[in-house]
Image (cartoon, rainbow, N blue to C red):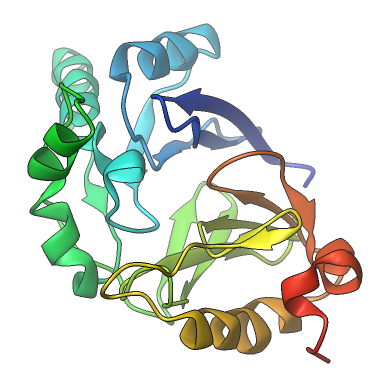
Length: 225
């Protein structure tokens, strides 16, 4: 991870891990899963003296995407002052559109304000690559938690952003009408475990881990090769 740098800002009552990711050499930067509290995220960007080129979403749940619209507005205002084009909001897979379109109604159910529906500038599909300076993040479709959940893997740095697919000692929730525990486990077994035991990952909540540690200790993975 020589050139990959990351800062994590847990946001909202869900303590969701919003990640600021950048290339140390080029200073190219992106914000991943801005679930809320855009002012705190901007403060972190200013502290590291970073100008995001894009905002990236792993999936459409309100705790991961609810702050995207407001943050994009703040970032674009600053970029326009510098004569720069707006920063696109990219991802997830289009199968999460129904979640992005209902963030505001879901937020009301939790008594939360300030979260907004998100409208990506473009969706992503498996096989695409997100370029950030010298970093290259492969896009993997890993459904189960949500239908359009994506994972982003930087193979050279041996690092992945896995959202709510895999956690330290656990896996993502699937007790939604659109969730599938079987599909989630298949995503982990066929998409994440083959990445290699040395791959470190940041998950959507809590402390990160590695594929190897989870292969050996995670009870949900015990029957996987």
